[in-house]
Length: 112
Image (cartoon, rainbow, N blue to C red; front, side):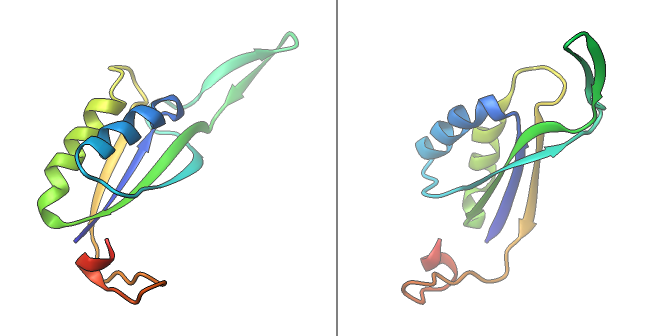
């Protein structure tokens, strides 16, 4: 099993959710986060004063999946989140050792 963590632009969340649903992903966790990478933030104008926004709003998605779904899920996220501009985000894949569904006690693949 794998844990996919994707950091994407907030306005792409609905597109990514739809793409994941189409490839059979039954659940995701989405968190509003702030961060920066190569973008290094940007400057904005507010009431005539210029200020620097260092941390940009992003959405972090966490998806637990079976090993055989990894490439399909990565392709779905990449395709739906891509704008072709800097700051589109990143996808991280990590091994997932154990899952337990609290309600039923199911474990691992049965709990996904």
